[in-house]
Image (cartoon, rainbow, N blue to C red):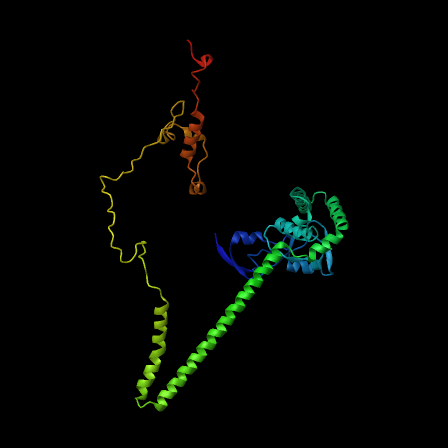
Length: 338
């Protein structure tokens, strides 16, 4: 399988040759593999066409879909985001429907009515995506728009709870950023003032001191580094305990570890399974006795997920044999009196 790298919508995707050959224009049969710059466009019907075919078929601005013959307009075509045309169609329908069906839980007296409303919205989306009672569904949508015209307009401009929370987060981040910027400006001013004072002190020493100029320059170059080390040393708190939690300077006695002879060693005790029925063959005998002939063989994917044929057969035999010969001895009707 040949792996290929495709640049799409600003992201690099790893795909295969087979998946790129699946992306094909149904009219001109051009594939993404043969033409890497191929752009598939979709409309409200969900059927994809390449950009060249759209320009040819809809040169007058309108036309019909080559597959379903639905009247379409050129300005309604958009770039296909999903490989599955059904998913593309459903996403577009959901986006258009939710613009009008924009009620929230606060618009209903109880949760039951809100859930009924959500179920009605999903039914409308499903009908339109699968072409079920399209005319009746469109009439329901238009009736809903007429009955809730004012509320739809209010909800479009009313921010949702998520928008309010996001706006609050953005405001907090902006305030935090301003505080950090102010602190950075203060630190920068302090640093400039410190350098200016050090420069003035260096000039004064060079002008009025009788020492060697090289020694004065070396002394001033060492001072800032020494001050920084001193500041780090002063701000560092001395350690009071070791990483084990024992305090530094502890002089008490430690409890010695127990001897091996005194410690309780772990001993494995195999579990006893009471089947109340015949004994199940051992897993090693399942293949030789023919139990695995009618059991689905495990492929690589099944074995990777933990499925094994002999384990599945052994488990099925255990479940089949449990209680096979069981009877209640307290019931005289079930006892063998012969």
